[in-house]
Image (tube, rainbow, N blue to C red):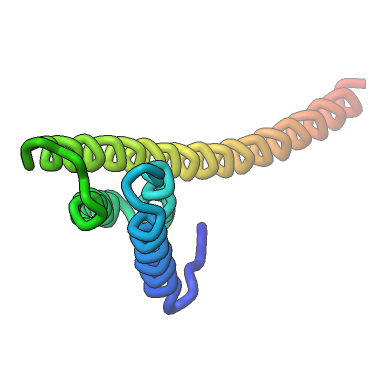
Length: 145
């Protein structure tokens, strides 16, 4: 079982906010022609690995909205604003799906580790039982002899 430090969640949230801010800033500075979409996965993956589904959804919303705002501020060439809304929605969907997959992977990993620990405990009990049975068989052979 993992023991988390007292302020661990707070530190992860700070890392998420800092990494999201950095990605948004870099996205703004690099302009319209250099897409940094994949880097929005970093803060969402941190949320998925350490914080859970609600945080994944919240960071995906923040990432998609931030991307849309940055895209608009850098002078998107869309003939209609619905393209911006659509692209923001697609960004949200991609970020959210990745975050939920990472979160499920983490959950599955924890389950496998827990089951492995339980299996090792049962295996130790089986070995002790086997040793006891062998001792009793040896004692029975001495008595029968």
